[in-house]
Image (cartoon, rainbow, N blue to C red; front, side, top):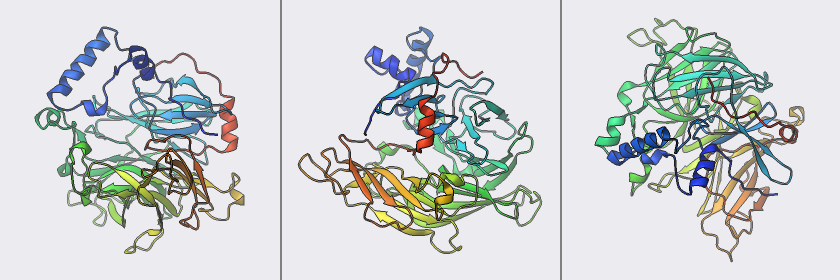
Length: 467
């Protein structure tokens, strides 16, 4: 069964009623015209033409399943709880309000601890300190922890899209993709600037901490990492953080009219090693200024992003990561043309890519989700005993031709399944879809047990903001 539905957000409801866009989008924040649009939106809000009390997010970035609820996520707003019926109907249970938590937004990349059942989340803002807040939802969906990362630990507002957890730490990335309002007006660009001279940091917050006074920070060479693959602790207490790393970044993709994506902006899998047990004066893990220093090592020459793993190993040591491989010569268009399997245990000095599935010319995919072969982990023979699932669109397909991804589809879009262990090029299954599936962001596989749980979820109380 195939179903395609809009998430009924407050933003969608208002714009549908009005018949035109009512809220600003990221691309509007450019030049003097952008300032004018910001002023106009504030006027519309003050006059009650636009109601932001129920948020203005799109709920279109990622999904999570926790405490019997399917959550649609966008980092600019709170989650929307959904219920997917057996006939494919999508029902909204409302915008989630977390009583006692700080802030009005929720990361698109919360981390579900597979052992404790806790859902760890954070939010960030460019407005004013605290720029970052952190919280935990217990197995039943209740808030069990909430704290601010103070200005002493987070001195600047940065774009922080993802984070990580281990058994004992919460891992935050402070990379220098900073809000820069002057850039918007003077350079007619988006108001985000990569300030390499400010360097990067990674912070470790003890899990269960009542405040952020015990955070440990590590300096790193300036880089950007939108997405985390995983993190864990080694036997000696050091922390390994695996990210898709780029040396630089520009969000102004529509200004790139020709040529390949610069190598420095191409994401590649890297590992960051942090030793929280080292003294800040240790010569092996500190700078000349006495500050702790982390180690960053590139693991592959293959460009790719949207890393996924077997989710049973979130925060624990595991071996394989699957990344969507980037098409690097398209100029402004960022696309993905396959999936690469990375071995996190590959010896230093070797390339971590151990296998790659390459799509036919003209075919492009999204994030590839790992699905265990058996819902009971005891029945799985290995970590990679399972399937890779993604949407593929064939841009060469027409109403009278067969999709080169392996199945006949007048839309050109298919759901494709590969063997994650063997990484054979030939798909195990190709499901032709009745209409085009647009290139998107992140996906989620929901096993039968969780699907049944979300069917019985109860509607939420009327929406309220977190206080």
